[in-house]
Amino acid sequence: MKTRKNEDLLLSYMSMAPLALAFERYLECRIFNEFEIKDPVLDVGCGEGLFAHVLFEGQVDTGIDLNPHELNRARELNGYKELIVCSGEAIPKPDGAYNTVFSNSVLEHIPDISPVLKEIRRLLAPSGRFYMTVPSPEYEDYTLANTCLSMIGLRSMAEWYRSFCSRVIWRQFHYRSVEGWKKLAEEHGFEVIDSFSYDPKAICLLNDGLYPWAILAVVKKRLLNRWILFPGFRRWWIYPVYLMARGLLNRDLRVSRGGLVFLSLRKAGDA
Image (cartoon, rainbow, N blue to C red; front, side):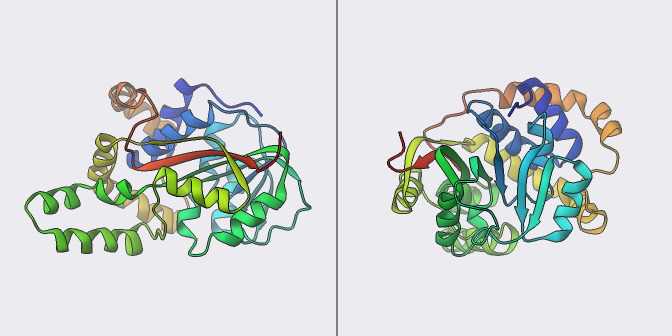
């Protein structure tokens, strides 16, 4: 399956989503551009379908999500051949149905991810690939408030703030290091082909500072099921910001300590 060129992705995402979300997703688009996406493809937790709409030139074979409201927007964006309302632990497809499965910033939101990983392994064809992005412990740490509170010694307040953001704002249950995510994958019958952290501290802090500017977009998303009402107009006026962001975001993807983790996996024992 063909992906779009990197230079098209950032401006496209910035025209359709808040900057904090667009910057993070752009990094992930760059990552997916480095790896083979072989049909048929399954997107686990596709949500509104914006990631697939921006990244791929064609349609993803199947997208699944528990939220039918989100899937309505995915249908409008027309990035999938098929959309199914179901959980990741019970996907109505036969064994080995997909050559590529991906889950982009989804697994951390599921309290018990073990059944989901087992289901993904069942659906993955021999020699197929599973690509996943998930947060590291640094994702909690690399926020402006946590950094400031820790610097002045208010560590208990910083810990409360991290917990509040994880449970209430981000609704994330899992944070592991690269090694921790690799171990979890191996425990569920996967072999790790590649793994690394991305999203460096500077980008995490920048995104955190941009979150308040996304409040209006969040309201529009709740009411109208889209972040941006007029993407064409936004694409025009945001172009100068795009030129500045491009240089910042087009640096080395792999970092020693990043807020997010990428893994490329296959079934253990596959050649």
